[in-house]
Length: 152
Image (tube, rainbow, N blue to C red; front, side, top):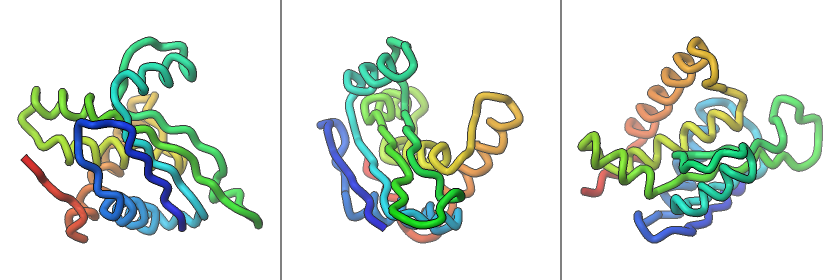
C-alpha cells in the first residue's frame, strides 16, 4: 500500500516513515485492503479554506477526511481510500489547553480521519461513542506497536 504524505505546515516535525507505519498499522488492524491513502499535515489557514470549500464553514477544524474508493466495494482495480487533512496548529492549541502532547493529538486526528475513510461516523451520539472506542483502540494498538512518539 502506498501512503502519500505531504507536510504543508511548519508547526510540528513530521516523520514520514513513522506516519507511514502508523497508517499501515491502523488499516491492517481494521482489515482494510487498499492501494493508496493520502495524509496531509496543514496549518489552520489551509484547513479553514478546505472547510469553507467542502462544508461552507469558515471555522478551523482539527481534521477533514475525503473518502474516494470504498474497500468493501472493491472487485478489481486500484483502490484509493481517500485523503486526510490534519491541522497541526489545532493540535498544538488543544494540547496546550489540556496539557497533553501535540504529537499524540495530531496522531489522534489522523486516526479519526482514517476511521472516517473506512466508514465510521460521529454525527449521532451513538455513532460518536463507537468512533471514540475505535479511536482509543487504534491509539492503544499504535502504543503497543511502539508507533507513538511523544516529543515535549
